[in-house]
Image 1 (cartoon, one colour):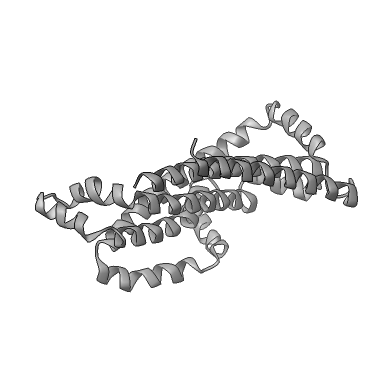
Image 2 (image 1 turned 45 degrees about the horizontal axis):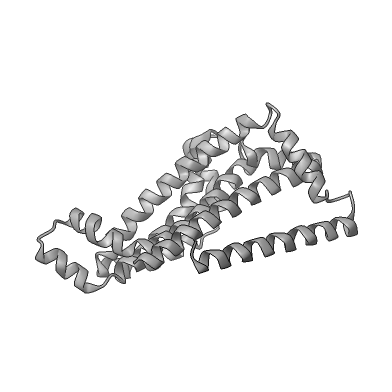
Length: 249
């Protein structure tokens, strides 16, 4: 384990301890009306995860999120490499891409519902539009920042366009692209959960919204903790690989 990885691990552990202490202090201050203690939440979460009511919703969210993430990555990389390799097109279309992304995406969800219905397809589409633009923008910048000598070498070796991307551009731009993937991962997850919260009959987002409506504090706290732990663990893993890539290239 590198020094940077050890430092990141220590920082994560310190932050976790701080958050747990803050959580407990807030619980003592606010009380049962709006919070549960960390121990109570962990026990309820373990009990709920052991019930048959939990797993169908987890599977639904996992399927929607996985499909949305794959689509966001593929579409983002295609757009990123396409615009990154064409400077004129990128100068024209990148501002349009950023401007379109600034539109509150929740306003687009009714349109997606009309197009895809209340099923999993609308959730996948909504998750995808959250994650695709950051991945595309990071990829555009990563391709632009590739050293010109690499492209000259590709021309000397007479590599085709796809060979140049696969053998030269992608490895050279991978560290910066991976940073975009981290952001795209988080935003795709948010988009998928939001879709489940506002127009769905299954999934963790649906469970969370239903718990809010019923003022089920135990379930709200358990689901929030579960999603936070998943997002934090995934972000830590992606950050670790990002550091490895940056150190290698």
